[in-house]
Length: 101
Image (cartoon, rainbow, N blue to C red; front, top):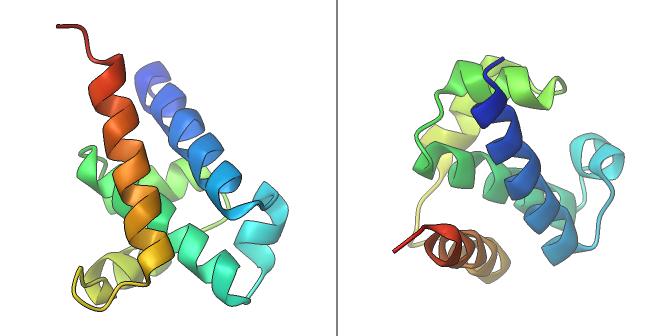
């Protein structure tokens, strides 16, 4: 796995876990709404950064490519839970703040 992709994944994962107050294990194993919303936030944020389904699945080492694809295909900005929208926006703002001018 590319070092830059791994670093990006770790940064995004850290924000998602922080925003939802979860551990990585609980996020990937749980079926509670917070766990599901956290997984959706992670996948959609990584997709927005240009990672493919395969790359996202390889990074997580806990999700299969078809699961990542399912989340990506079912996501809708219009019906997304507000926590997901807020987390994705938080990650986008961080990216903007860390980009050199």
